Image 1 (cartoon, rainbow, N blue to C red):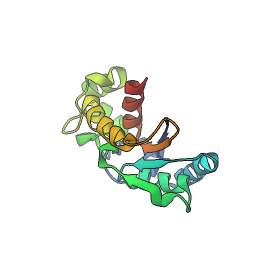
Image 2: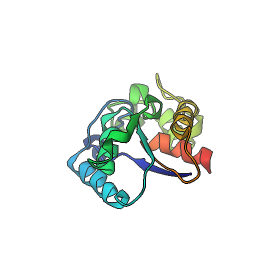
Image 3: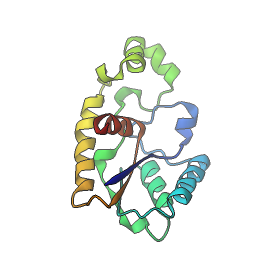
Image 4: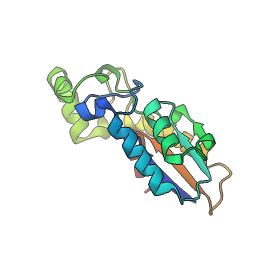
Length: 163
């Protein structure tokens, strides 16, 4: 089976360097253009199933990538939502580095060792996202193609597990 793993398009918070986590920030105009361009690249790809998180930046990216004729195939799975950044959500990287320099440095240098303050670890993200991916793959054959539109941390942990 083929799995196409895509990240959601840009949001205003991405552009600003603000940690979104599980706050539902919509796509920016740039993000809409990115998602539309993804759709152009996938137009001729025979996609059997598509899944995204419930956060609008991922779901909208998936819908735009699928196009009007295929967007009804989209399945929403909350297990694919972004890592919970806890106390860091809504903050700029500089603000986090100033408030919590030790944890922030660990997050940059060895992210697998960090439990977000009042949030998740990458292992927790992997545990739930892997279940979501397994559910999305259920019943698909070797000839099928699955489109997964998720978030940075989710895509990274899934790729590490797959590879």
